[in-house]
Length: 629
Image (cartoon, rainbow, N blue to C red; front, side):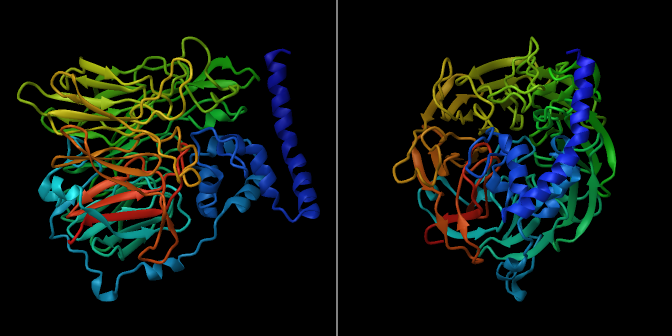
């Protein structure tokens, strides 16, 4: 059949869908007590999100159980303007409404009453030391905390105990790093709409901010330019940035950074430097490509730079031009667009000495491929002009159509590698008398060391072959002498792929190996709590260094604290269990992933639960302290 005829046939089918859908809804509502949205979800959504039986998930999208923790407002925004816009755009409004009705959790904030501190214990004292101001720990994104900020030493690490657990209802994934100022922990329960100022000693809330949109990124803290106001800054899952007065929780400003349309997510933390806020945008079209009739693909990564005092846009860096029709069509005759992709999942790194901002990017999602995908890029701090770009993998063009059975939008034309091997973590600057080094880990398993002046390669090491959620997923840590490179690598050995989950360290100056610690599955008495524990036990979360200790955690929920000099385990804890929580909300631990590890003021904080990428859902923030303190 000629492509033009096929395209017209596809459009005709889409025109008939509303009529068929109304008949289906009416028939189901009259013949069954089962909500009609369930069958529609199974038909349109389960291939990515899994069905009621847990089967069919593509390993990338949140599972059905996670979706059922979202409110109707959050779901409606996601499918009408947010990350699911592309997929949902081909569905009639009646179908979307029925699916939302089936999925939506009831909005009930009654749990907050038991979470609030006593009225005389709600002061947020910002005159106390700021222990942790952003996910990177410092401007270099080293993830190396000073002892005086952590309030912990190596000796303390083998003597930890759980101080308290705080649970969040209707939440299945905790991915965000808090910021810590004195006795206050500012925290965002990812997927919820609450940002809280928590008392570090007890876990009660001093204030709560209810966001109109679903939260996603880690928090940042600092003064808003010359205003003198200290703020908590964060981004959401829909393309908005917020600045709150840290003392009161009141909103100072919000900014819509969706400069090129819908389907925008803010995943990495904001970087606050002097009078600017650098916002990493992870738009890409990667999810929309999974819908066969979507004209794939649009969206790309950006850095949107805001005025810290007002939230107004200063400058924008685009990883590529806006997508246009390429003249090609998919196998079912739908027109294709590009370029797209190169999202920025990570927190930018500020290099004031060189007046540079370092970013890392993900894959392209449609042709033509660009040289800014799977890349480390240096930008001018003042203008956003590109100084240099180093590409870790060329021609990595991939989207969610490239599943177990490739859909029409899978960019399988040569020479695409179909790898999905992003940079998910920040680039890390190491300042050395022998010459500075810029480091970054990649999902390919690669660890790259570059000259920060030119972007030229100094050395490279690779552990395994990586996967779409394997290799180095969310970043590295360094003490300046060694760099620590966690590897996730889920799944079982197949073909040339041999998983190598564990922690690997290398000397910064030479790239030579230091020590390694492969992690082994532990399924005894855990298999019911940890699905696929035999092959999903790798280290995905961004690690954290404190004194002589290296803190990491697995997607199977196990917390590890290593001796950074030799890899010996100082402390281990299984977080996948039920918890008695300080606010009375039922709590259960799960995978530790993304930015789920933080510390400050004598305490270690772990976000236990990550119901994405095949992880174990959970809803508790765990606070540890040395015994006797």
